[in-house]
Image (cartoon, rainbow, N blue to C red; front, top):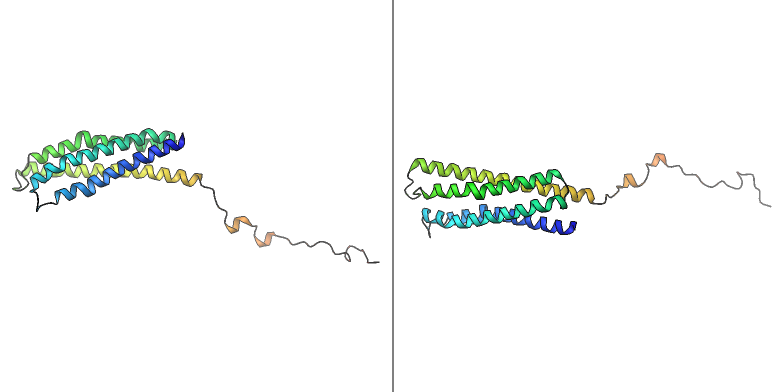
Length: 186
C-alpha cells in the first residue's frame, strides 16, 4: 500500500510542478511574446484559458499529493507543506488568476490606458507570480522530505576507518613457540 501511495504522490507532485513550470515559465510568456502574430490585448485573451487550465492541473496535482503524503511519508511537516501547497494552488486558481485577467481585460495594452488600472493589473500579476513562487517552495519542501526519507532508509556503507580498528588498537600475537613453552624435540 505504501508503494501505491508513493506512486500516487509522485504523480501528483509531477503534475503540480509540471503545470507550474509549463504554465508560468513556458506557455504564458511564450503566448504573451507573440507580438508579430497577436496584439497585446488579444495575447492576454488567448493566454487566460491556458493559464487557468494549467492552474487547475496544478490544483488537482497538489490535492492528489496532499492525499498521498500522510501514507507515503508519514510526516506531519510534509503533510503540512502539501496542504499549504493546496491552499496556494486553490487561492491562485479561484481568486487571484480571475482577478488578474479581469484587470487585464479593463486595460488597453496597446494604448497603455487607463494608467490606474494598468498599474493595478501589473500589481496583481506580480502578486500572482509571488504566489506561484511560494507554491513552488512548498513543492520543493515536499521533495526535500522525500529525499530525507529515502536517505534515512538507505543502508549505510561503512568507511574503511569504521570497518577495521585503528592500527594501534590491534595486537599481533603469534602462537607460542615450542621452545618458549619449554617443549623440546625428542
